[in-house]
Image (cartoon, rainbow, N blue to C red; front, side, top):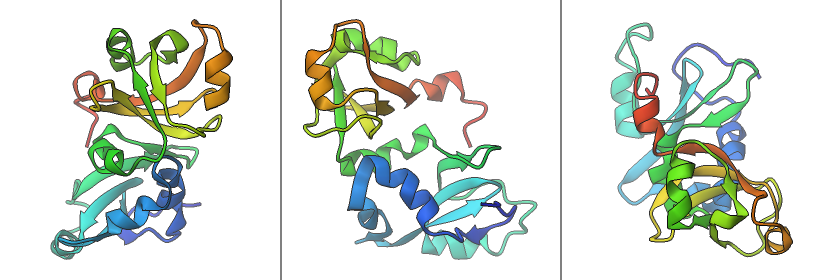
Length: 184
């Protein structure tokens, strides 16, 4: 899919939905039809923004070249046109997550430094989580820490050895400090 370099409605409405469908499922509708107004996804300079209709109308008055960002950046398209979620979307996606992994307190810091989650650090996992399913990573105190991909299904996690990877790291709240210059 070619990504236009302008503010536009995401032409293929399913593109961000497919990417966010992985961790939150059908709950994507709850992000768009909110009680406090209508929200939408907009594409600007290969980044997908989650923005209210009111802010979108105001941003339309600014010249495209002068507009840096608007709304909350949910992710961006890579050079190979694959969508990658940014950590800035965590607060919006976590309440609607269908598949979750909780990490033990001893493994939280390792995950926040960008490492994968090992079986020894796994606290709990949502039932029926399939292999390569998008998940939201939580601490045992139910604080969302980041995103990941399940490396093993729920049943495989029960039988695996303690040093095997159960979730691949994608993004974590530690990125606010590590990559503060590049988060827009």
